[in-house]
Amino acid sequence: MNYKEKYDVIVAGGGPSGIGAAISAARNGIKVLLVEQAGYLGGIATNGCVPAFCPYTDGEKLVIGGIGLEVLNNMKKECAESPFYDNKPGRLKEYDWVPIDPEVLKRVTEQMVVKSNCDLLLHTVITNVNYSDGRLESLVVHNKSGNFTIGARYFIDCTGDADLVAQAGGIYEYGDKDGLVQAGTLCFRIANLDIEKFMKYAKETGEDGNLNIAASKAKAMGEFPENERYVSGIALQGGGMAGLNFGHIYHLNPLDGEDLTRAEIEAREKLPELMKFLNKYVPGAEQAVLASSGPVIGLRESRRIVGDYKLTIEDYYKRAYFEDTIARYSYPIDIHAATPDEDDYGKNREYVTSRYKIGEAYSIPYRSLLPVGFKNLLVAGRTISSDRAMMASVRVMPACFATGEAAGAAAAICVKEGLDLRELPIQKLLETLSGQGAILDFQR
Ligand SMILES: Cc1cc2nc3c(=O)[nH]c(=O)nc-3n(C[C@H](O)[C@H](O)[C@H](O)COP(=O)(O)OP(=O)(O)OC[C@H]3O[C@@H](n4cnc5c(N)ncnc54)[C@H](O)[C@@H]3O)c2cc1C
Image (cartoon, rainbow, N blue to C red):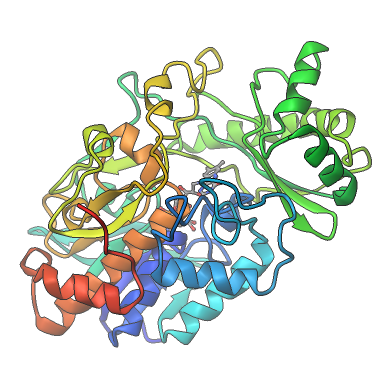
């Protein structure tokens, strides 16, 4: 690695979108660097210990392929299959809600990135950008070697916070009309779960991944953890381990250091209470212990860029199709409450009742990856250009892999053909993505 040399593309952030972008660009034969502040890849999946991947299918067939599917398949090869979910209408066990083993995912994604010939720089925070006349020139980074700059021709912002856009003074949107964002959660893993006993109970009672029956019993006894309405999800990971997406931290600003500190402390303080509920009300979890949390609190919502096209809830309702569709997806609008007095699915019930039927999907256009005012910057992942409701669908990981992969392929074509991002021949991008296994064939 020689940072004095200019890269063709630098990808900022190694979460699902950054992994997709970096591998996609590097496999297209250009010189790519991926910069990540943590000591491993995976983004919120590993850093936030999220227990499962949201669906890769529309209930009957895959809608997300390419690099995202490769990551899923590579991880699954090394993991015990979850006994929890069976195929049922609208869910394909092989691809939908697959549990995540964060240790396997870290290694699998790292190996895929390295083997794609992408340079990788971990433990490195991007603190600023050098920018002039609509072009980013370099990133200012900090790591144990000190502060330095790294230049590139194109950049892809996959930071989950649109940091590059903000650092360059670009425009973005944030939160609801009151400036509030969805609650965060410190996900955690438990060990010593008697999976056989739990499965027997689940089969006999119809208990589901949200532990609704156990939660109702605890609520009736006044013993459900304070300010919680439900368990967002449990994913069984084999070997007596399970991942929990449980516990909301409200009123937080993911862009404020003090707020993040308060959120970490509040979330960790809550864990014994959550464990107490599991031990007492979930059969099989009587002897379960907290194995690990985090490592950091997971934040569901942050900046949304203002791009050439803003995906909106109307696009969701009409199952929109665009000539420049680079991905399609079908996950519902999933907005968690921002405050404890707001019912998760109360204020936003109109969206919840608009879940798609099996086989339906919407499209994501290339233009939503292009922040206005920038000539050589793409954005992928949860911060693409969308309204708040639509963000609550595109934010989940399969879609983030797909927008990342598209951004990486687009940047590679522009590098090789000497084009600006808005001169890119869309047909060429779609052919490249299809050749990589992305799923773009859909019914209009
Ligand atoms: C509590 C919670 C539960 C969730 N549950 C699910 C679920 O069940 N299934 C699902 O599919 N999705 C789930 N999601 C959503 C999903 O995990 C995220 O929306 C998704 O990971 C976003 O991907 P991304 O690539 O856009 O960003 P991220 O995953 O946030 O990755 C961004 C990366 O950039 C790095 N980075 C950020 N800033 C800098 C910087 N300045 N310098 C260097 N590196 C930087 C970060 O360290 C991180 O690795 C959940 C999210 C949360 C918070």
